[in-house]
Image (cartoon, rainbow, N blue to C red):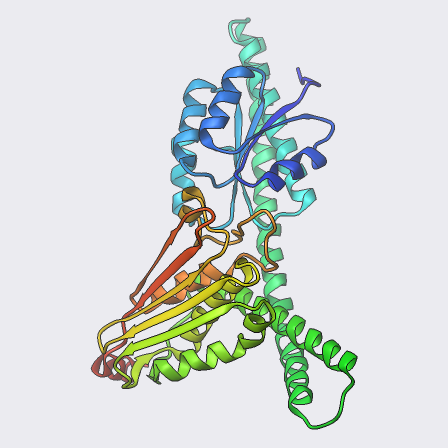
Length: 398
């Protein structure tokens, strides 16, 4: 028998996620918790919670396993944006997760998933209620419950297909947008550098066109890059590259943003100035994303620094800022997809650091971050340059 008193628990470090559920499911009681520990306390106080929706918080696997053990009647849904299929299956096997909702999700998709979870809860409750009754009645209910579960599974399969189609449509749109945006940014650059006289207002408008176009173009590049990384279709195209020239070129593209926020920027490049074999295009994107993040999250008048140490065997880059800083939980999730930080989040897609991690690891390197709230952040990447004989072998095998 279905119940009309619906109660959900949303576990997320981001308050806006909790608020989103409160608005979307205003007909139900929506409780919130900002951590796994807080969620455990809420569950101890409320024994009538039917569905728990968990974002990617710290100690997520332990929380899900605990809910399965101590509150077996609760149906669990997980919001995720990055985990591979085998990791999700392992989580489902260990904690009995009912559904995974992939970011970015739509309102209808989320509404349908939570409705499925509530219906599954009701079916399970009806099954428990009829346990111990005569065998014929119990068998009939079991058949009806299983039939409905099969229907829910088929609906979930269809949702996955729709989600995959949505991803494909996003990729097509991003690909089609790249060319016109590139043209728009190119023309804006030419106009800005031309000798044609523009009024102060005209130059300000042109600057906004260039800034907005560049930001949109970077988002398109990020979407396409992440899709290639996810599908395993991206490859390195290593060429001789001088790190000093590459870094100076990246800094110049961001010079206007540094100056508009009156940031104190310092640059130090040490070590060899000989060319190294790296994918210069990907490494340029890595540096752009790291510096862009530092600029975005550092308040006016703050400091941003880039340090680079180059040897033939290893390149180390550190980007420091005096921005808002990250909590330990945020540090843990910093390089995941669609993750953004701060109470007043900078504009962006939340893909930049995920792409940084993917491109760096393609070079055989690693990423790390040191941060504390109110004390800024230091992002460190290491890149392993390719060796000439390795590149030669790779080319001969193409």
